[in-house]
Amino acid sequence: MTSSFGFWDYFIFVAYAFLILGVGLWVSRDKKGHQKNAEDYFLASKSLPWWAIGASLIAANISAEQFIGMSGSGFAVGLAIASYEWMAAITLLIVGKFFLPIFIDKGLYTIPEFVEQRYSTTLKTILAVFWIALYVFVNLASVLYLGSLALETIMGIPMVYGVIGLSLFAAAYSLYGGLSAVAWTDVIQVIFLVFGGLITSYLALNTVSDGQGVLEGLKVVYESVPEKFVMILDKSNPEYANLPGLGVLVGGLWVANLYYWGFNQYIIQRTLAAKSLRESQKGIILAAFLKIIIPVIVVVPGIAAYVMVNDAEILNRLGDAGLQNLPTLEQADKAYPWLLQFLPTGLKGVAFAALTAAVVSSLASMLNSTSTIFTMDIYKQYINKNATDKKTVNVGRISAAVALGIACVMAPLLGGIDQAFQFIQEWTGLVSPGILAVFMLGLFWKKTTNRAAIVGALVSIPIAFYFKVAPSGWSDSAIFADVPFLDQMGYTTLLTMLVIVLVSLNQNKGKDDPKGIPLTKGLFNTSAKFNIGAFAAMIIIATIYALFWN
Image 1: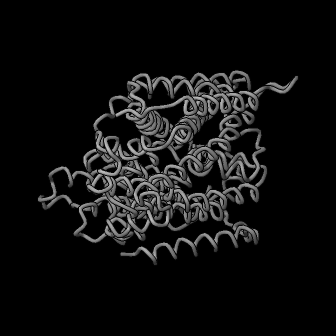
Image 2: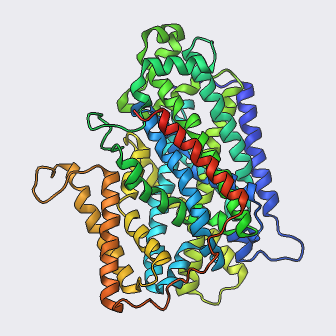
């Protein structure tokens, strides 16, 4: 299925592309007489204001995973998948209050750098290598795959060309300009992302209601499929294995969110580039409120698409266009691209620009963070400790280009995956529990030792696999436990923390570790504006869950 693009669609999209490239290259320029150094390239000279931080956090986070993958999960599962977004808003508040004061106080460039200061160079290197592999083989590859899938579905562009095109677009400004180019273009990307997403949601709901407006469309969708608006699934739901009831609120989803928002380099890096801690925390509040509205942009269209393809009356009203290549539950990730064909000329260009903005901004962020970790934690540690600023920046650019090349090769190999958002969460969940355990105890328990952290990180993998193999056919075995993957993540985290605690107590005999972080009085104090914003966000989220509990 391809959508017919008119002149204004192409004009809007090309204008968007030139705007992003122009702004990215303009903010990347070197000031007269100043050689770009590591802080300029990797931390945007530590000059980002709160609104740029908040926008950049969302632009880095919202990618094809959400637009394509989460809409696909909305099509297959319903509103319950929005827990990833709404609980992320609460997680952001936790990160802003309890994690950032420590990270910014230590003047970090990278998350592995914190590991070195708290534990050892050995553990830092282990985690740095892991993160580089994860970003290249999972994150970059999956974003490229889903983005090119959208191009193929909407415009008929072969996947290989889509992968190459998206890669070159992201590389054109991010490799040269570093985090500064990424963060400032993200402000523009978020405008396109939110506006374009809202247009798609509006028109999908308006189409469902036969032109009677959004509220009537929501009413029609809710009355047609009330089961799609249940936030807490019971065991009878076929998607329970992906979103296991109350386990979503009290279990492994906290692991996924705390790991992602608190210890993920390409997310946390823009908060480390803030003018100050207070500025960074204000950016966190903005990002939290933006997360609350994201399900309206990425989940609701998926539910609307489900109603459209399963309602004969609506299909008849849509005519031939609505009868072409209808997505099925087995093709859930085609739901969002399928919807775009119903947008009028001009708005298709805006929606397509929004989708491209989501893909390109995430690619640029991941590339910058991959190069930051490689350059600061591998190259300067083991290859050239005395590298000049010019050499350091150039190595960052080269390493990003190499990472992008590998991801381009990997991306087409991901074809055939249904509900890619769930796939990414599930496989990242094999390693995130161990890392979260290492960081949480390292931050807040002064007795945690380096040896215990290394043992815990290594042991967490077989623990995770112990739970993971059951759905593959071992569930009848007395040895393996068959539990949903979010529960797997929760259990793995708790068991890993237990291992770390036992090893630490055995090694230090109950004494504090010399590298333990002193949690001084007032360290976690936040401003009145942060507190008011955090309280308001939590009230909104609590109200949503109360309305759509079951």
